[in-house]
Length: 264
Image (cartoon, rainbow, N blue to C red; front, side, top):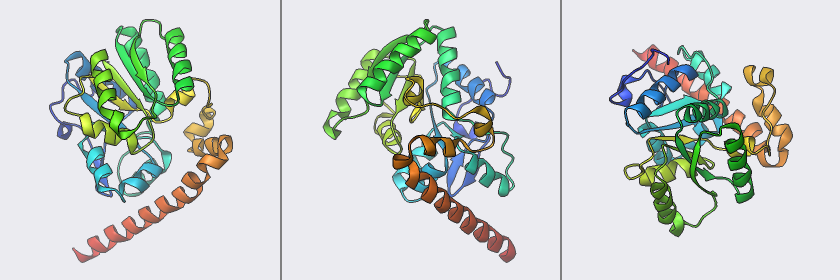
């Protein structure tokens, strides 16, 4: 295990930066894993979510979403555009931590430690294939339960009860943002899972329905282009318009900081 962090008492103990009033932890994947393993071993609950340009575009327009992200224990950088933006402001950001890579690492850890997991999200057929593939690849993991991500508001409490009855070590929330974050916020003080991770579309990947970009595209910040080619109808607005919106946000913030320095 990495020696980065062995014990944490609060989020203030972990390195963080702030952009658009969003608290982000610019750590390596190995450093996140050290924190997570320590917390689980010491039975301390942790909740973690990732941010990319699309989620930041939503967060700046939604105070409830912002408050939920800022109250999470860990927030990783899930998009290269956010890495580049933070570096342009002078922050030292070692790497992008892609949520699928982090989720793979968590499953490997859970398999090694014979932990249990609950899968919440995606369509029922995708969820079923996801379960099957996890059981094949990680046979020592106990899948304590699963629930698709399509439900009416009045069903939320029953889903919470289902998760707590399963009493998993790990809870994966495989819904879009801000749905998964707001579900967590509603039940954060009642959920008994020791580690909660927002995994977004990860279930589509592990089920085999969606392929990840080649490693060179991931490393050069072009994974969004690969996904756009796979699902143009669903993702064109998010990526083509969303990236432009994020660029405008970053540019506006640069001017704001420049004028602030000039006035000091």
